[in-house]
Image (tube, rainbow, N blue to C red; front, side):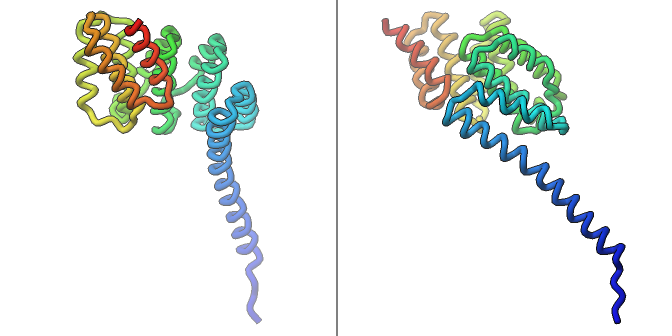
Length: 228
């Protein structure tokens, strides 16, 4: 009669159970984030509920990467509810180095969205925080170059900004949104130099690349003003 090793069976069951818990812990936050962003934020546009649920998940989440992802999401929620005080407080506690690569890129998009709606102060704060990334990470997150170019546009003399944005345009961007932002600021610089024809051309390009984004809305507004 074959002897059953009870201890080995018990250990195997415990290992399987622990692996199951690890899998759940990895999948659950991803499911929550997809639900929040696709359903609550994009479809339902219930930004108060979006923030409320994020706060609920933050209380239970111990993983630092997930916590910082939730904080970036909160920034987008506060942008929509125009709660600028809470937005600034949230920026202060984000540890950008703890964000996964994709969410470093999403952080850059959040910064640019703030600049797009005229929240320059908050955009500046987030841009400065982006400098906390290591040089290797900054190199990998190509959208950070666009963030710094926009930051310079608002905080430094304009004379070299046009060339900076033109150079960024030569780099193949993986995101149409980033390309749209570049064209928008090229248009703004041309407009400030009274080159209206070129400015309109850039705004039209920004619209074509920025469909269904805040860049499209901003470009359309600027074009209407030029035609008045």
